[in-house]
Amino acid sequence: MSGRPQTLDVVRTYGVLADQTRWDILVLLSTRELSASALATELPVTRQAIAKHLAALSDSGLIEAVRAGREVRYRALGARLSEVAKELDRIGSEWDARLARIRMIAERP
Image 1: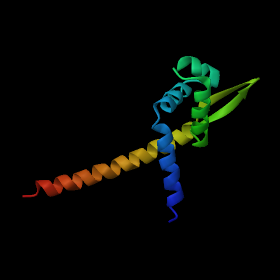
Image 2: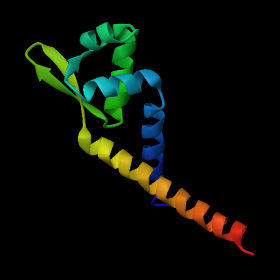
Image 3: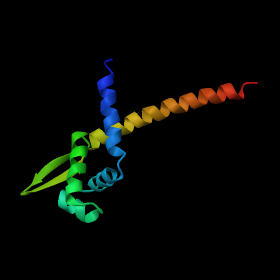
Image 4: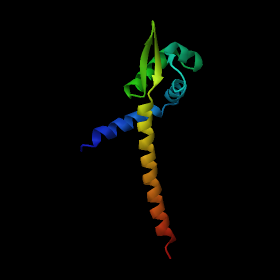
């Protein structure tokens, strides 16, 4: 059962990424630091909704808040995104291997 907490963390992270608005926020933050107000001007979502999405992204370790004077800006965290990408690559590789085995079995004379 030692793998269970990490699995739950991965599932939670993918759940956070499954929301289109959070994905759009993450894409914007991958290019520059933005405040919640700035994000609200770029997306068809209220500032209050942006704040909730930012909290979910932050709780998942995908973004972090950075103080810039009186303003709080957010930025994407490349290290966490790289972890997520590696996990997706691992899952994809396992599926490729399974499909290759199925193909070999199906093509046997």
